[in-house]
Length: 602
Ligand SMILES: Cc1cc2nc3c(=O)[nH]c(=O)nc-3n(C[C@H](O)[C@H](O)[C@H](O)COP(=O)(O)OP(=O)(O)OC[C@H]3O[C@@H](n4cnc5c(N)ncnc54)[C@H](O)[C@@H]3O)c2cc1C
Image (tube, rainbow, N blue to C red; front, side, top):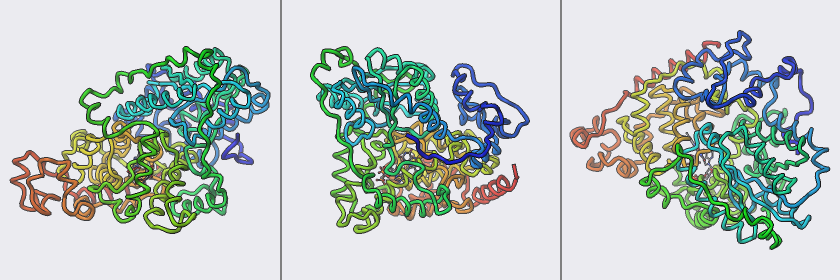
């Protein structure tokens, strides 16, 4: 299936280099123990960005897995269509294999590869796999690969890994009721995943593999590799669009360009869904396997869900704290969605910015893990409205649907501007800002000890729950990148390492917005004042007192700024820190640094 296709391409840099694309080469050679060599070529497309050392030394570019930070020229070459995007490379691989794929006969079984689509209901590729299996009268097999190196490379938080493994248990049980086995296997080296899947398929006598698309760069490149490998081994790979309501690449402006601004994009999104109602049609869950599957694939039904890799394991205390907060599996997602659509969605537009009230859906973990599809969510919300239009009727429902659409938006961005997935900001010139790497300040931020109560409450919520309210995500991201002038990518990384709902596109998009380096961002000269944000969105200080016990004894509005509002003694006695920076001065410093960086012309 070709998507995001482009009729005609200019002569590309790749062509000019006789097919040598350093990023592809990296995929073939990168072994985590030996970082890829630094190419200090003077060719601007291959030379690193002048600040590449800072990004490596501060854990932003993981050299165990990836090459150095690319030059701005290389990012711009993607924008100028001079370097093929990973999605285009995947489409090319799928197109190359299309004739061969069409000729592949169904043999003994059909396989669905679960990734971040851990559900049986409304799962596009799973439904297609089931249909093929049914038509051929053969069993369907589920497959899940645990890839510890992907967890490392993608900074997957232990709480997210734990949620995933618990979800796999639910999924395995649900599939078993349909006599469908779920085979779960750990593959230590991520470069070995394609070959291992092919081996498993051959071992099971299965020729067809179905999977849903993932839009991050590593995954697109891996799938391109699988498409080619499968073609060489007489197997067939089928990919479906599932995670977004509108598949990436479908929405373009009047002049044929991808949208980089949300509002017109959202109007186009609404129009497109109204014109293509099938986008909100739900897929059938898989059908029951023939009972012979139980004998034939008996060993696959015995498969255990493994423990998390050691570096991603929760402590017993964390397990006790987190697990009741985040019940796993698609049934929980369904329950939560129904409850929200029958209740809080009504006041969502009014209350969603108040972090002390449970007014948002708390469904992000389910969207991120694929225990809930965005289609089901939008459709359920729409059906609880008094109109079939997504932009009509109840304003709480409309607003919620428009928030779910942000998730689509950031995935569309990722596909068209893939270098955002390679540690580059959407606007390459924002790479030239001279960030601070002050470790004391960064530590104070991560620990919720900056002396700014709203920031500290939010960071402690993140550590305490593995989740943070959206308003607070914006406040702490702005504080890190502007008040502390710390490289926003350190914050982006810290979020991924701690969020139960960590999703690359939404996290990167959110950081890009708040740090003013992303697509459709806050202008850089708009710097959140943490005190004003605190007074506006937590007027009574309930959120602050819930998460910062040192300030529970502070009465009234002093809780927003205890040392400046006469509550210094209480705060100091309870051990609450003084502000690490003074906001007004920090703001001036940030404005100057942003301006200098943008105007530096690198
Ligand atoms: C700096 C920053 C980092 C973020 N990192 C992530 C992340 O890693 N994973 C993640 O899912 N969301 C992220 N978000 C978006 C948003 O904060 C969360 O989706 C939201 O707080 C989740 O709570 P909820 O499910 O109750 O949301 P609701 O308010 O109920 O919204 C419903 C759903 O819409 C989507 N959504 C809502 N707001 C946004 C948004 N601004 N961008 C993208 N999708 C949105 C989410 O899937 C969410 O579950 C980030 C935002 C910022 C500012």
